[in-house]
Length: 214
Ligand SMILES: NC(=O)c1ccc[n+]([C@@H]2O[C@H](COP(=O)([O-])OP(=O)(O)OC[C@H]3O[C@@H](n4cnc5c(N)ncnc54)[C@H](OP(=O)(O)O)[C@@H]3O)[C@@H](O)[C@H]2O)c1
Image 1 (cartoon, rainbow, N blue to C red):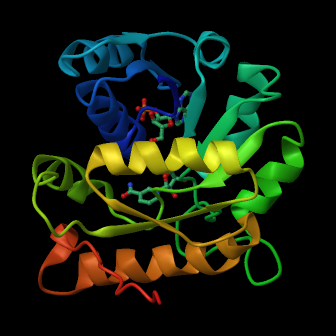
Image 2 (cartoon, rainbow, N blue to C red):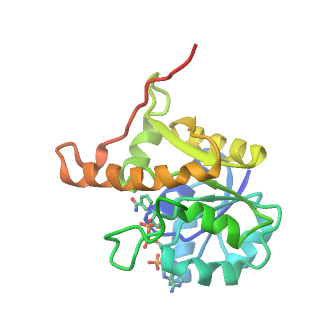
């Protein structure tokens, strides 16, 4: 898959690196320094390059949106039209000091994004896990018990894209249903972050759900 990274910080930098190592073609974009993007591309040791958000959007089959909520408008203004693109968002709708959600209960960051991008195919994923666990999960991907990672969305094809990326990182993808479920997964992401940073075990924490199947 060709994956464009919009926001190459803790989440975008690490996930983009893992996607490249898992065999995808990755374009890093949107950081304050072009040298940082180039270094990420070099260090990814796979098929990776650095570009502008608009080049990344043109090139990619799927885009990972990994910017602070306050930067969403800015980055979307730079990507241009995203019609038909699978947009996998890990961005949580947080206020400036990251102390609370600014969208919750009756909507979610993912649903607001889908309204902002009516012709794109938005999936919410990768936001219920601290970035610190990502490389460890990738390294342990061949073990039999993988941690779960929930995702949700309304478009079947882009959900398949998200599930593939989640699996490639080393998680067991857990389809949580339609995009409106992000109203519950986004606050859950805050719970996971609290547990990861406040409790013993720290950011190594990754969660597992029991399957409820017939
Ligand atoms: N970190 C986590 O563990 C975690 C977990 C779950 C969800 N999330 C969500 O994921 C999203 C990204 O989080 P993050 O921790 O990866 O954030 P981050 O490390 O701050 O990365 C954000 C990216 O945006 C870039 N950026 C910020 N302002 C910019 C500007 N004016 N011009 C160009 N680029 C700019 C940053 O550039 P620089 O690289 O130059 O700083 C960085 O590459 C957030 O919405 C967060 O809620 C994060």
